[in-house]
Length: 224
Image: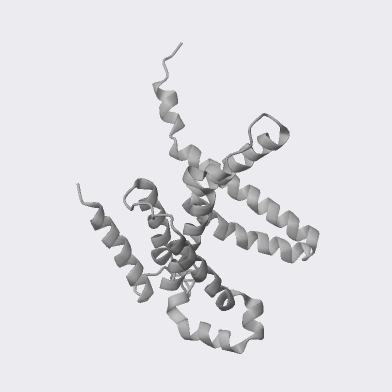
């Protein structure tokens, strides 16, 4: 059995190749355009989550300094990412252009990874140990039941994030076409977004069902 460090080195090496434009997939057979989300670059974020959940990487400590650093990183990215600020302040647009590959979305640049880690850390601290602050209220009232259902959906989507991510890339295109046909209004955008969320939740539960291998349980069940 290989050491987990070998897997980590392989993941990082593939990500580095993506940053060097040496690992990419074509968007279509008739052009050199690559996938908008290069899987060889974006795999880093998914394997990071897998490593944390598997215990390969220790959970970071919770302290004010790390929270402050993470918050500064997240806030510092806002003027370099929000189109309204970029449109009004030329200096930020110049800074964004200068950062180039470090913020590349297609190949998942280094600063995007740092931003993801900072945002994930803040979210992890906010929900508390094992998500204690997300626990539904006690009792069997309507609010408690709705909270449990909503929380279960969110957890399922998080557990099947890779499958949801892949489905979302395809569904987003289709829903964009639907908006072009329907026209963009508050009602149509609300319907499209709600429909998109329902599709992604369904994809998460479908992926979870396949990973549970229910057919094996049926095969082992004794015949009456």
